[in-house]
Length: 303
Image (cartoon, rainbow, N blue to C red; front, side, top):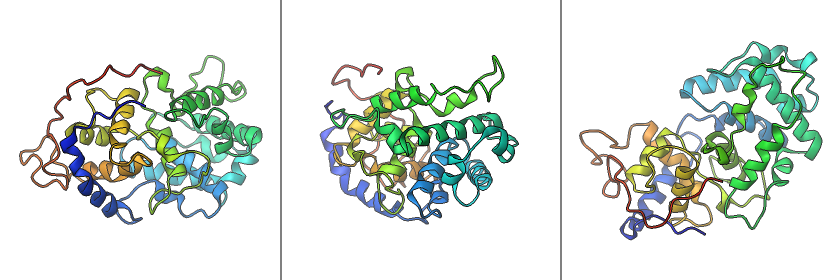
């Protein structure tokens, strides 16, 4: 397993990180799409609703929540039942008029169809994911690669017109293409971990193998804390931040994601501000401006 890039003095920050985690580990700590999933009681509904909500988790929070509400509203009381019986010609009416940024209604219809095929093939999204998951792998990167390739292998010719852009592919990025796979890793965090925020729907994926859902907020806090040497977002940065966080909790490194992300979203971090880190809960440990780490080992190869 790759060695952590965390410098030994920074390891003293664990109490502060744990305290920050505790502050955000409640359902009222921040507005987040994961809380839209909590209202469903069955594991099947939480799994399907969670995938759809995570797939739309890009852009402003208010816009994300509105789009998630619209999509889940179109699915009715049971998203899992809606997906299991979904027929594009019959059931697309509620989805075809929806859009989220550049995602079109037809892309949501294609997503619903792919999810239906997953459930037909493996019974659950977890079952479909597990077909590419190896317990001996260092992380979920290889499993995500397989998951996305198999999802996009389903025939969508009856949904998209000839030569039309298959926008549904945006929901299934691959680590091998350099993508950080933020929304897929977010879905995995919701499904695998269990605390007051994450739902713990899945039982057969090890939380130690999760990768942090890298977005702008996690990236800049990760750079401030010296958790990564990379300057551009992508799978390498997400992987390295996760490896660094394993030094704080090897069994559950992604537990810190929600708190670090919302620390930045709430402007509690001193990133690029005049007071620097004087008001940050992690003050004294961060490196405002994101100084580069000294390279202690060779860069991770793309997978």
